[in-house]
Amino acid sequence: MFSRWLPAVEQTSIVRKSVLGLAGLAFVGGAVAGPAVAAQAAPEHNRPVSVSQSVLADKDHKGDKDKNNDKDKNNDKDKNNDKDKNKGKPSRDRLVPRGVQGEQSSIPLSGEQSGNVKAIVKATKKAGLDERAAVIAVGTSLQESKLENLGHLGDRNDHDSLGLFQQRPSSGWGSPDQITDPEYSTIAFLKGLKQVDGWHDLPLTVAAQKVQVSAYPDAYAKWENQAADLVANAWNNS
Image (cartoon, rainbow, N blue to C red):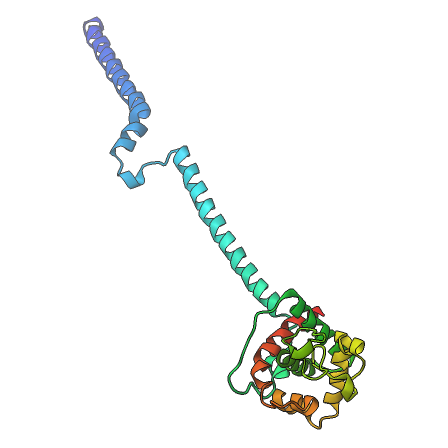
């Protein structure tokens, strides 16, 4: 009786094995092919980025960051340079407490003239006076000699006037050798300036005229702006 059903059972078993085998192959095939199929089916923005693309993106990001850092460094450097240029310079209020008067003039300076500015500033410090005194002295010299240490000019001389301030030996300013020494002539001028009451608060042209007694008393005024700039730049370098 049981033998009659045996072939049928075996057949059923065989069929089940075949079905399971096919299902297994289908599963394995799906496991192998799944990601590739998923990648193809996925939208462009959801697809995995390749290693090379990721590295290039990182490099671009790093490059932009480095450029921005360089810009920041350069900006900071420029700001610091600007601060350094102005660091320690006398304030405009100390140089020109009353402001400039009238139309201003300016001339380019040679190396010799720039050296004479430094000599005047150095002598002013030696005399124990401040930046305002140096501005008055430099402005006076700009008018008298254009900051040139003039010797005897023959027929072009104003009497026996010599040096940066066109001082006259015959008027008691000193010997020709003394007057043509920048330090001596500056200190001699400053001694005269200190005898002027309230010189520190006077307009440059008034203070200078009190010392020089020029035939052109208002001529000094036009040099005050350039004198202030020159002293500002030379004050801490002399």
